[in-house]
Image (cartoon, rainbow, N blue to C red; front, side, top):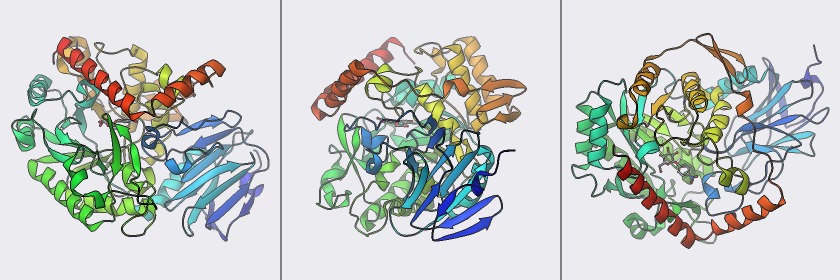
Length: 532
Ligand code: 9PG
């Protein structure tokens, strides 16, 4: 038995209290001096899409290349941090295999490895509590989850719905006719929810149906309900784009910095993204009315996306810490949604707990495993792709007692898909382990045997056994994710140079707009060639 690590560390904190199996610390700033340099560090990403993974301490995780996109994938305040770090908690694995976890029990908190041998934790504002424990990773996070539950509460953690989601086949190419055809073709496949994703709205900020939805969103919901399913809808309620009338009508609702400049929330849909200030009474009233409207249309399953926008740093109408401000907005939303199922996405993790039913715990999946552009040129492990999604999701499953963990959709189709059979299987297995099943496959794109496999997946309730940190047994079959979890190798000098170039181009809004135009055209062509 190795000597207990907790007896060998030197702790700096305002107070230390013994807990069952760990200690409770308090302090605005705490430190843990380790007896030697750890082997691996557990990065903890800020929001759904941000990298969360064990990384060898001698291998640096480079900051994501600066670009107008980066605000969407990482906490911009720590975007330049080069030391091993993360939001709210961090863990180290020592050479003898013992794991030590330092986890904050409050918001706006961070952990970092300094000088290779000291773990430090700090709160952005004021004082707070910390949990420190050492032993098996799984047990440590179980204890941490328990303490978080006492402070933040939990959402729905039992039975999740089986969801058909429009995004990963049609993207923004949805319209009423296509969705109704799919709804019809799903037949008796056991989906509980039919969820309309991005593409129905006039603009991000103007949440009314566009010309592609002639019967309105209430009409769409009732057609869904007529098939015995719950209607689901996607919105990004904390974002505004310049083309939205909301942007022109309420400039005072936008989050600004200390100099009065609008805070960037990234770049998407060929436009700059801006955030709403969730402490502004006008915004809160508007959010409440929006949620009530969506409920009134008939949607009982609501996916709210790009929520990190509400927790970006800025000078708010009411001066309060950024994650607390986000939580105020979320409380209003939760309340206005009533009994509806509330899925958060692109959401800061800890600040969402207790206020939602489900949480996306990784980046988007895609019909490919990984991309050279994102892995090697942009060095961005938080962009859409199956490998990125699986890596981060697996590391977040400890959240299950607090929230339903959404690993994103699984694929059964071969059409319009570059994933191998085994790669698809990994994601199907992960969905069973995460206990959250969703799919975007267009029924007309499935072969008969793929449809049979999808049905079996939806109907399955396997017995799952965890046999290692990322090793499971599903109905007795071993599923080992270990080989899938690494980060791509660091690029060489030439790739680095090319990456700087591509990253620089991705910084020019005009070029990004043109690129978006190409993507839109390619999507239209794809959907014409592959009718739903
Ligand atoms: C709709 C989609 C889907 C999807 C969400 C979210 O550029 N980005 O970093 C980026 C990341 C994720 C993303 C879009 C852009 O997808 O996760 O399920 O709802 O929005 O637009």
